[in-house]
Length: 513
Image 1: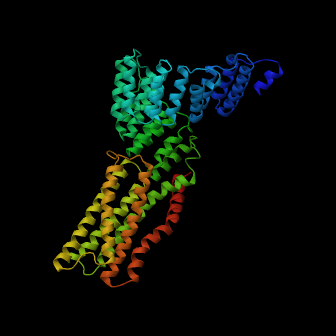
Image 2: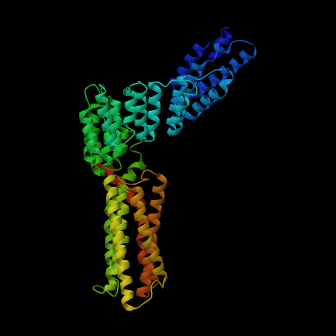
Image 3: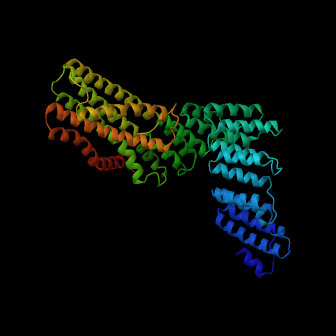
């Protein structure tokens, strides 16, 4: 439209005018319009060059940088990189060479896509074009490492700046603080002070986020209380601190922080804080909090109070309160009904298996649904205890058969029991080594979590089936064990929606909103 209006007035746009237009479109998030204008300008420049006119009047490296920056600011990093590669490989067909700003945009684009290795390659490739990196270049490269938690490379880039007589500024330090764990963040905050610089709010926010990733909510609280007057906490600071407390299951402190936010900041400005608390805060206290502030005009974001989120919160609490004791009672009744009964040595075999696979493993699954560091630890402890109980049950049946001179694994119950036992040990080792909150090598992998969660469900279902086979073998009955051991699973599946609806109604009634 702009080009058409200038054409109607017999005015020829130049690079300055086009650069201003692209910058305006990029600032407003209209990257697709900026790209359309750039393509039209490039076509006009190529046409002017074919006619012998200077193309630089229409298109120069600044226009290319502005178009790429408009795409990068709108998270269209792939499109920005296409412009970069076209400029470096073919010079846009106009003999344009990249400058330092071009490489800065490219490094920032690779970092946005979490490709920190490519970002560092672009930094090294600048020597080929005889371009010297500046503070913005290193800041973009450090940010790329920070997004992928590559703290060693971020630290190496800071050292590289010092070697090139380019002292790191607060922008570079702020990007590097969040690249590692909380200890690394604290060390960089001290390094900033030794450089006679004052950490900004951005630096503190990155350090608090690092504390949250390390489940160190105490250190996050320590940071927020030490923030100077020149770097006051903002909404991001409170959200990061609340998230740190949530991950450390310190929900009471998180709620107190949220109340401080509601008092000092606009009432509707804390949606992410509530989304963080929903996984950890007990249902009634959270609803009482919202009801208490309802009179003062506090209205949470609609996305927070959507039915699916509240139902999920209530269902986790209701399942633990109802099904935890129910599974324990079921295991006790099933163990009492086993004959020969206690104190016969064989009786300890079904009793230990019921304790491990029904009581401990079932409650471990329910506890994990709550979420948070404490729930994850309790889940691990219960699963470890379940593995010990299962191993003891295996020892009982093995020693009993040895004493009676009977062969091992002669029935489908024995074979399926051995498979369940080996699967239990394998999942315990894999869960500890891969998903432990402190030492897990792949604790953030969604794929590993998905397989672990569904494998656990299959294991519990298989354990129930194995128990039914064992009952039919010992009691010489076929229909009773199937009904006895299948009924809890069927009841849980049928009653799940009912409990969720009851929890939702009770929450809305007690909270008063």
